Image (tube, rainbow, N blue to C red; front, side, top):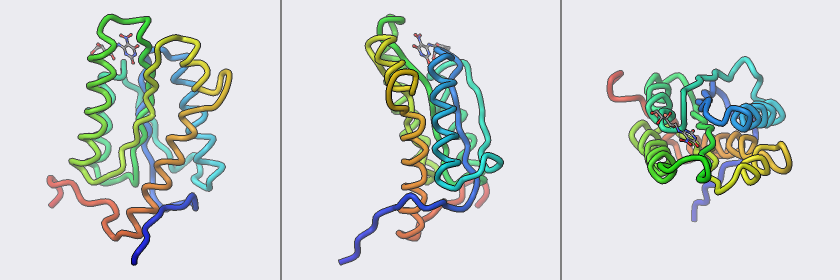
Length: 164
Ligand code: INI
């Protein structure tokens, strides 16, 4: 029986992070946690590129574009959607989540969902390291685990169709 399981050893390659500017106090904290986690797991900062977008709704397009370049081992998506702040919470949060998933399965590149979806500002602060744990750091670890898992399976990063 084969068992495939990614570990947290430093993988090769470059990583891209897409960050939403909306709720920037929170998303900057997520980005800091993400980069800190990468560095502490052996991925130096000069192997990480960061793209800023207006809001979480715009994250999937840019994540997919970055994944399609074929230049990244994984793309990490960071954002913060707070229900109390928007009547279209369900649209923004739902489309961001399904767009991130689509970007990943369409390109074969791990695209990690590090977009907070919370009921309150307090919950968002709690999850971005400003009070408690940092989901940006967890997103970096998920990226590393997925890259190492895919390298075991042998699929790795598949070339986007426009380069084939
Ligand atoms: N974008 C977010 O990332 N978080 C939010 O909480 C949010 N709210 O509250 O509306 C939000 N809206 C902006 C949206 O992501 C787009 O940038 C905008 O609709 C333009 O397409």
